[in-house]
Image (cartoon, rainbow, N blue to C red; front, side, top):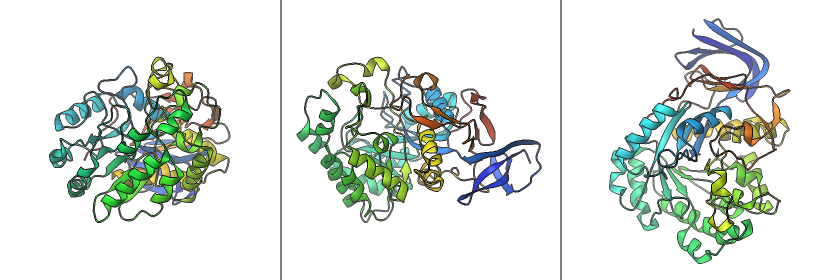
Length: 428
């Protein structure tokens, strides 16, 4: 056996003192005592599955001054994430086999974590879904305009869902209705204006449309970054292969709280009211939400530090998502069972990758945390995204001291141990 890792391991929903046996990057045994060529004993420290982030924007290619696959993946692994799935709104957009090939090669060359890619669906490439499905892990449909979004006409949705269902790949939706957004569009001077220009009814209308079109379809459907209690209520009644995600910024921040420089908190969908925030957090806790996703969407400080109406929408979050919620679990605001379901098990299931669990046959991806000592305050100057700021400055968090990816110690004592190119494309 290549490796054994000993600690207080999360197995079958509980923590127990155990050893994880690893061979060729896979978990092969979980026992009280194991012998291996190399052994790491973490004592009473917690060993949990590494996270899977189904929603990142690493800006590569085309906008690498904001982020690239190396810096984004380094941020991910320092935050306990071993696998990411990157969105298609790049320059050029990832809407063809050629662009997918280019992006795969970028990720293979630069990433330090495993990764997958989405193909963007436009009104002009629906007939290419089958061939693109051989190169991507899923499809992204933008029903409302956002940063460099590939705006899609909803009347074409039945055709997309039919073709995607044949591939078995999920279709992810940015669910804000474009006609509703146009109706409410206004000059924005502050966050409350942004909220008024993208009201919850736009999300609610779009989610209704997605649910209606998905009825009777075999396609896997995922609604991204649900931000409102109205949208949440609709999705509680979902049937079939419909899942949805919530972000840290929508479930922890609210527009009524003093947030500092407001342009830095501009994001689509917008940060909403304290009632929306609390409803979303409660839904994370009680099992209604499938996935916690970062929607890591970095812009530089210079780009954000302008008049509100001119500022781009998006916030970084891949490095802080797991640590923020580890702290909340430590304090008892969220169970470890729910956290691991939201960040590890369900995202891996959605994307069809053998990650997210400490079980035989799964990738040996796990993190080590010391709840007695690892608590700290988030500081932008200690984070690793190229953008250089965070919406969670000074928030308490628990960062992993060690991270394993496929049995390799990628982070050791809060220091990176691998070079760019260690990450693998998780295939199709």
